Image 1 (tube, rainbow, N blue to C red):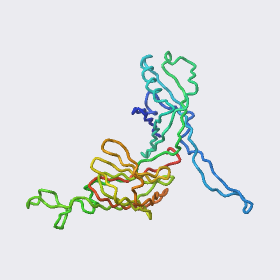
Image 2 (tube, rainbow, N blue to C red; image 1 turned 135 degrees about the vertical axis):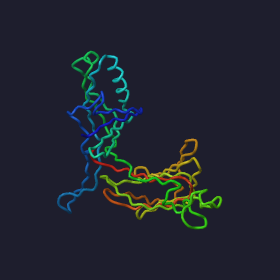
Image 3 (tube, rainbow, N blue to C red; image 1 turned 90 degrees about the vertical axis):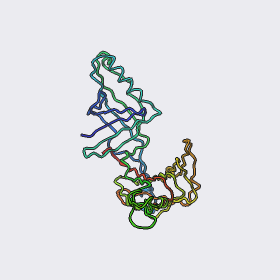
Image 4 (cartoon, rainbow, N blue to C red; image 1 turned 60 degrees about the vertical axis):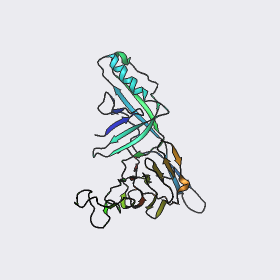
Length: 302
């Protein structure tokens, strides 16, 4: 059975399969493929037409809901009050769908209406009710789990992580019986990994860097780099490569954010193609952790 969870904007979690407020099996809309708008071109020089592009349209979503039964009207009122608090046109709840094989996909949805809230019986007396809640997903893609990687300062793939200054194997301080070992600080690190995208669309990487002096990322044949962008201890740098938002943001220790996109030296942004594999090689000078985030996109909920 497909699992369905609603994660509210307020942090609440609702099991829509087994909870007191749950989906019925009738009339669910929105879990299938998105609808598309296809752009074509016709000319007198050729027969038929030529497709020039397409885009996914906002996804309409309908959840038929069963509430109850409850032992008393106070229980009914308390729970439904919490539920309807989530239903706002200006905030996103997240629908999380789990397939029988354990894979999880999520969709951000926004409340549209409750069909007028009509009911044949007063639910405060019947202590059970059914209704339909309609939502819209402004972004119609279902998102899968991040298939990127995080690299710590002591990651074994680091070029100089915990290496004996006099050569030889990595050492653990205090275990060689010769006094304090001399090791190279993990300042210059290199990693190279293949990433396979399971999604239905290109996945554009987002890079996160802790304390560092410079970085260079080779995404296939594209290069993204910064040679004079210092991230101090306690700060963080986020580099987004998606064409909808290609930006570098430095987060200060006080939480303020600064756009530092112009301080990048190279902007060779590249994606990991749908169902394809791309090598991402990173060189980082600095002691902080860094991460490659890759989120796959899917047409359907499972």
